[in-house]
Length: 94
Ligand SMILES: [Zn+2]
Image (cartoon, rainbow, N blue to C red; front, side, top):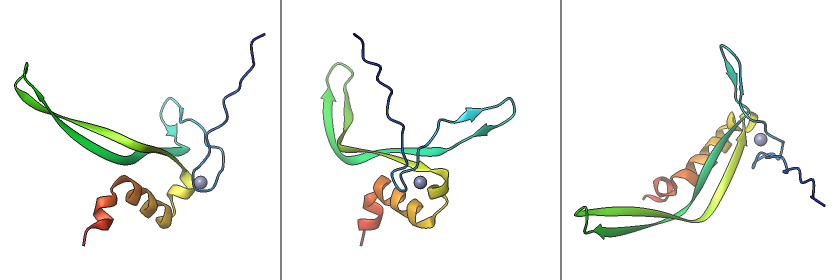
């Protein structure tokens, strides 16, 4: 017997409300959330002898999936938090 699994709804990481996909109309669209994929990164430089170039591979360690509803996105505190998650080196700089 097949299970009837309904995927759990996506929720705002900040306030917990359910967020909905963007709805497109003929002349407009309505966005309900913004998505951020981030995490610690590790870079590897690999020599590609065939192409004679160095390729940089970025590995995302401990990935984070941040959903931000449009209500929270309007809050400066939330936007600052998202910016810190996206570019922690900016805030860590002396
Ligand atoms: Zn929210």
